[in-house]
Amino acid sequence: MDCNKYFSYDLVHVDKNTGARAGVLHTPHGDIETPIFMPVGTNSSVKMLTNHDIEHTGAQIILANSYHLYLRAGSKLIRQFGGIHGWMNWHKPVLTDSGGFQVFSLADLRKITEDGVKFRDPKDGKEHFISPEISMEIQEDIGADIMMAFDVCSPFPCTYQEAKKAMEQTHRWLERCFKAKTNPRQALFPIVQGAFFDDLRRESASVISSYDAVGYAIGGLSVGEDKETMNHFTEFTAPLLPAHKPRYLMGVGTPEDLLDGIKRGIDMFDCVLPTRNARHGSFFTHDGKRCIKNQQFQADPAPLDSACDCYACKNHSKAYIRHLFRCQEATAAALMSIHNIKFLIDFAKSCRKAILNDEFDKFYEENYPHFVKK
Image (cartoon, rainbow, N blue to C red):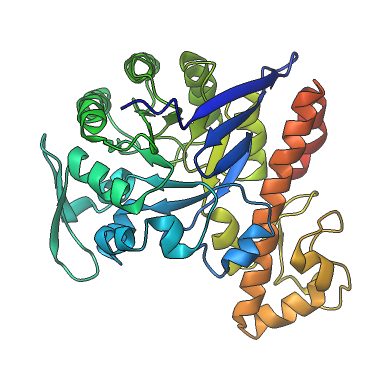
């Protein structure tokens, strides 16, 4: 199914010192300037925030999860509303994860076969079955601009044979995903697997690159391994993917992760951490992560970050937000979620600006130490 009529990617500039990339991904619902951080709205809503809030963070694309939307509210119902854009009244690009990772994480509640995965809903115990074909049907019902292939995730840690088996099944399922896909207005991103073995990662990158996809993803990282290991496999894998297509590192999204990933040729990132951290009182600053619960902020009149122009920072002090948090007011988590998301989106924009000026190495060296303080 040819998507070239509706999707294209312009690699605008490659930083001459690091190889970091700046580009533009064109989609039916708008252009996405890369590198980009993508907020996660698992259930078709970014937790604590309205679409108005998300718009004002500068988000160019958001994520939803087809596994959760299939279980609740149901992909057929979402289709009746014109797909996810009509369902949630969001008219910029949307990416849906296939649910492969979520199904895999059910452990004793699921059984993987060649046909697909049989699993029980952990909330009501009802049995379900998702195959590559059903995953494509669910994601086409949802109507996201970018769909992810239904893959098999390796556990961490795992043996070579476990990783090889999961990778090979991922490749067989990928072929079935492409055969089942019917809508050219939706792009399908294949996913590199292979766990923590160089030769498997190389083989997987070669296989998925044989498909003329709109973009490609690196999966199976940020699953419990240390930063050094994640950076090694990102650096090893990214150059094996087509240079003229966007590269997406799945489930990664702290400021230091963005810096490390962009340095290694990654264009797209997502993570639930900005909103999850906010609900637990953590917020990003240009001098590292902070916790609003700390006594030092009790009477602090300054915003969360003096360099940020998000709604929270323009209107409220740390003292006020701390007070709300201590009183268990949901507004505190909402304000810090707005801030954390905008911080990462703006941080990715700053990375892009540095790349366009061939100064990403300098930007990296100036900023990285602030986020990895001991």
